[in-house]
Length: 152
Image (cartoon, rainbow, N blue to C red; front, side, top):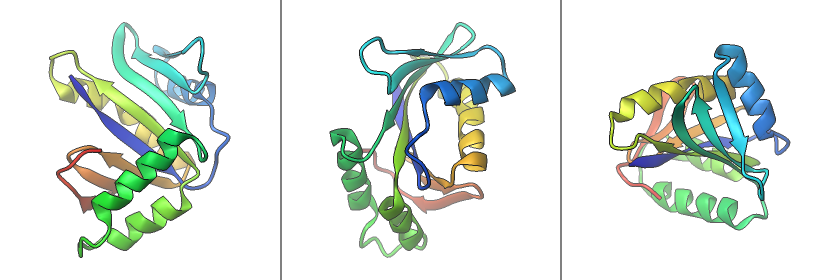
């Protein structure tokens, strides 16, 4: 069992899985990203023996990036909620999506989500953007900006 979280980065397309792994290792040396042998933009994220999920970098001009941005727009536009414009501005400026299919293998989701916190903390601190969590909403570094109970 699991679900998707997406960090929508607005300033760079040059982020690599190796850079993310190195940043996470500064927080906890047991973090490891095992890249897919065919696609260097996809990998398995582990903290020690714990499999946190699959991590993928999606960039403009790839189908997944374009589809995700369009689906996220549909979740937000014309909602009338506060925060709508901030989310739409972030989607308009999107340069990269760091997507994680968080896994908890039937266990407590909070264990996996807690293990992913260093990733989101590092991204917020070093790469401006917004985090989207399925069935929750959109977050900036200060907290929830736009609530949605849907997933894409």
